[in-house]
Amino acid sequence: MITRRDLLGGLAATGGMGLLGLDARPAAAEPPPETTRIRLSKVPSVCVAPQYVAEEFLTAEGFTDVRYVGEKGAGVGGIPLAKAMGAGEVDVAMNFAAPLVVSLDAGEPIILLGGVHVGCFELFGSERVRTLSDLKGKTVAVPQLNSPQHTFIASIVTQIGLDPNRDITWLLHPPAEAKRLLAEGKIDGFLGFPPDPQELRARKIGRVLVNSAVDRPWSQYFCCLVSANREFVKRHPVATKRALRAILKGDQLCAVDPGRGARAFADRGFKGVPEYARQAMTEIPFGRWREYKPEETVRFYALRLREAGMVKGSPQKLIAEGTDWRFLNELRKELKG
Image (cartoon, rainbow, N blue to C red; front, side):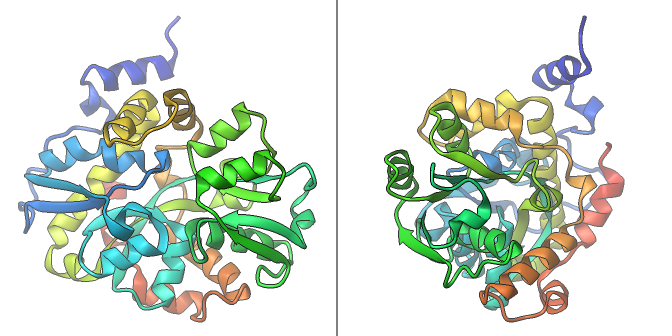
């Protein structure tokens, strides 16, 4: 018996993407993009696979020079990526919600265009930590302060009444070293982006305190948003819409053919165990970008991070000055469900 998932996956794998609203041909009624060059980021997390899968759609949208930038901050994600985008080194890219809010508050010249998916990160605790409140007075490893890991954890502990500045001892370690320290019981908290959570669970290291794909309120808000350089949007509105459409189509394709997303991730040169990447692609809720409102995501994280002292501006100000949902609203009507 062939299930609907098997059918959709088969259609996508065999080129039947047009039946899913994923026709790679450009919209005939639209003018061509104002520029044929598009630069996206190259971040080592499976959750941004939609923008890697989107390359074929970007080509069909009229971009003849598609580049994935991985140097300097553009290859890290979070605030460094937002800074690289503000500096004009990246045009359009997926990035994590919490650090994007911090970047908007800091005045980075970027614009948020829409959400891609919820459910990405997972927060792990050591054997000494059974609940989130047990993190009080404990050590948590992050790559650096204001990193995606730091801003997300700050949001999480603020939500339950802890002060991330006084109740948590932050240690600076790269993810690979932090995973080792967690396994050795030398730290108490670690937040991982795919495929790190899949690896930790497979190796039975630590316990999951928060899984943003299923645990409220995190599962109700986007983890990854699409942002763009402000000047790029101003000068190239048609290109901006076409780029956003390509990424959203990539998101839909990841939902029906997770294997393609895993292969696109590996094709970018990221090392790791392929099984973990493939598992992550089946666990992340791709293809549901219509079901959530990115504005609510910005408001939620702005409030949490303001409580944590990491954001000064009001949610209303950040939304008014740092978002533009007109392209997303048009694509909601154009792209098939």
